[in-house]
Length: 153
Image (cartoon, rainbow, N blue to C red; front, side):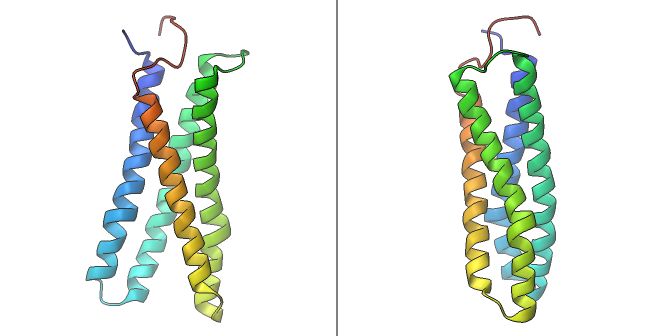
């Protein structure tokens, strides 16, 4: 069974999205806090890395959505494609909410003594949610089923 080029590109985008979330959230940031001199310095660097991750996540998600939209122009998506689209949209929404909703509140909580623990916990939960959405999207894309009907690439 030949897999369409669009689906392969979608797999690469999903793998980049999930892999970058995994590497940053579960390896790089913990190492920053372990090896940098102060938690403030580690936090500042982590914030910059998470912001860059948001744009990588958004790019991968948008590419995946465009590929899915162009697979069946004008037709209602198949149920399995609809679930994949929902996962990608949810992950994209979580990434943007962390960047524009939670991250500014973390910064202001550090400055004015607000509830840093609450906002940090919420941001972490949303990051894990995004990681799960990207991972499930990757899983579905690599499950061996075609998401589009047979047609030439």
